Image 1: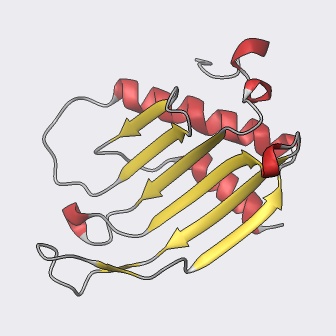
Image 2: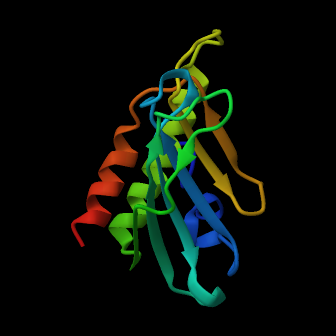
Length: 148
């Protein structure tokens, strides 16, 4: 099932010059309260025609009382690289896979802390899957970014 990128009008090439797409995965390190967050931001730097990818990882400290607040460290890891055509394809696969995960996820009350999201900066694309599961294409894209 191809949902995003199936036609020229639905592809990443149609992102306007100053728009961006952000993918986020939050694990369940702290149980139902969430955990570490990883984000991949796909954008055009200074509104030019070249795409870039920014990867950030934030670490959750689960030792603080969750009712009061959890303490986050600021960016534990950050990397910005030019986006290749392969990265763009992986990004489209991520969006397709999360859409499929969301559509096949039964509505249940759960205590899972895993949340996966895709959000465009203009909010024309918003996909949030909770409770979610492993997002394999996100992991593939992250691995591709970290190897550069």
